[in-house]
Image 1 (tube, rainbow, N blue to C red):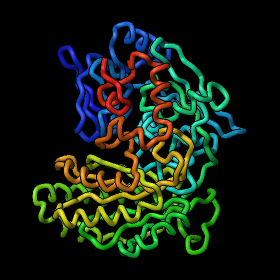
Image 2: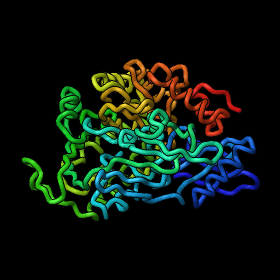
Image 3: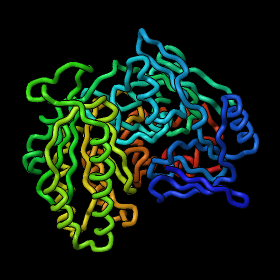
Image 4: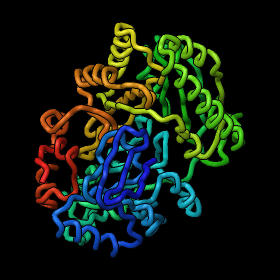
Length: 452
């Protein structure tokens, strides 16, 4: 989460992992659209810059600001529901963790989710956040409408029918086109997931990885370096009350307290002990990882979709994630493993591998291609620089694109070659925000601007 403390003249902000710090002179939480508009127009008149922050869950300085930072937590909840088309319009500050409860009275759900949910909706779509499953896009691919506030505090309504070119480019924007005040999403009927978690041999997994991903509704795996097996998670979608197919038919709804025990005590508690020990005694990490992997047991259970997708993350870390062309992912994973072994690193956190459908969102990490996502992590008390640098080099060699909210080293010169409509986006930014008010030094580096 983010932390904000009042100082003498400036505020102090740090992101969830503790890696990013900022000291804006103002940190504001407007309670109405009118109040937000006044903040934006005043910031523009003062010649300051403004960044919007949600949970502070990005691992880069993308939301950090030196002048004005704005949090939209008070602008939360449902604005309107089109039950016939299953489209739901939310205030942009709505946290992902609150959405299942908001949608429940309408029998609806988000089509897919990532594995954490503290983020604001605006933050999640603006950084191209995603879940897993080749039949599903990231959040941005489900957007059907946006409300965007410009530097003068006025709001423009965007959709495929209204200002379609702006809408197209604004679906992933890193907050540099203006302040998102409302987001409309295409939702789906509520569903359950039957979760099948199984430990398999690492070599066997990689040999059949593409087939596993194509045959499942949702598939991901976690591999702890220094081990020869991985934990796979295969999730099958079923309607509430409907039996699962084949051997999944007997999967029962898991008691929420058992879920809590596993996720909070077993997963987070054991992981904290392991990474704390590994940080103090790096040579012990391979043994710790092998022990941890050996005690993981296979299980099958059933729960509402959002309860299966999301796992609380209590142990803080820094993360890099790259989106690779789907067919390139398996070889990149092999190269990452070889690099870890060759370098002799002690890596206590697992690799996480997911996938997503191609979409048509210009700055989406899955734009125009089926995608395999490879994420690497380091405990926040450990140095990540060399590990991430080598993994990044491997990912880039395979045509990878960095997650917009996770650590990477790319600037505009490299990003331009990864996104066919990158220059279109930069031109739109220059038109909507010619003074680059909605930015900071980090976003300037991404889009080739010089700070004001």
